[in-house]
Image (tube, rainbow, N blue to C red):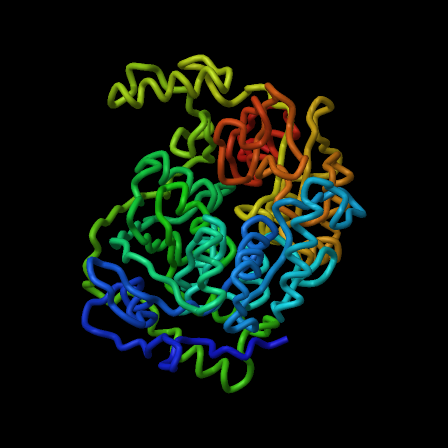
Length: 488
């Protein structure tokens, strides 16, 4: 199942140039310059695109646009498709179980296969949430440009790829030409100092960064994450951090690839093999910001004393530590923020100054492209000691991020531990992260969710979402209220 494309950019007739390091160059600048086909002026450039990922919502639209224009796919071996947003995750599901998504599933399947695009269908190894399956299948590689019609494509930057979301028309253009016109963003680096305390997760790190810097801090920037905390994280933990780059306004999130990334990719189905893999690793080692490279903005955040985080409002920036409280009007830095807080408190049914810990909840969702990988499920089950059970009034779901994750979890017996504790164990897909597949909570219900967005109506009309880590989600499911995983 190897992909025949080269594992790193090279000069070709169709685009992409050799990466030539210059003194004090950022990682993002290296990746950008390696893919410039032509400078267009005013910061715009025509870029070579190495990989396209398609899902059932935007991908099916892009394929339809190709058909309308009678355009072929330029490099079908570099495009990969999987249904995730609009499919049911009920055990035993098929592509038509959720009637509202059946047509999109069929269009993606038929449109991909007729054009030679590899399609990972339900139940097949490789199927899953597009931002989970891309890295785990070795489709996403360091130094590559990766696009998908989904804003959380920034997840793939954890492997050192320049990955970003696009619209369906842009995706269509890239499928037809293997190129895309983009305006170069500014550069930003966030260094996380210190190491994670016990039962504090990567999700807590990025939620803390967003609440501290704001949901617009990364707007117009490509953000590189660095520092001892990032270096100590596993590749999958880095994916969680990069996943929420867009919640900070950044289109691109990046981590410099290292030996952890190379070990992660070795033997993956579409990663290079043998001597080619060794050549690739030698090249990938140069994909890092040079000492002294200048960024347009730099931030340093000490996480050595960080506590578990969760959101209280309707924006990812409206968050606090588990021991925190809903902010008062007087805490707002300006009138606009004060008004936004008032609206969020009203929607969430929370009083100013009230504690978050102990708030009664109705549901828990462990899943999404943020926290549904095998390491997330292991972290969750680590807290499920024998005899502990989900509170009687709580509905708790676990939705693995891919078929490979599901199978690995079942080989390890993780699913049985979830089931014995009272969780529902489901099939891979986006599920409750987005209210587009019939899997929603009821109006007024309070949900602790490991997903990435807590917007109004994100998990159903009138649903109140608190974003948190898998550990906090498990602790809350057991307590029947928002709870601190460190107390288990």
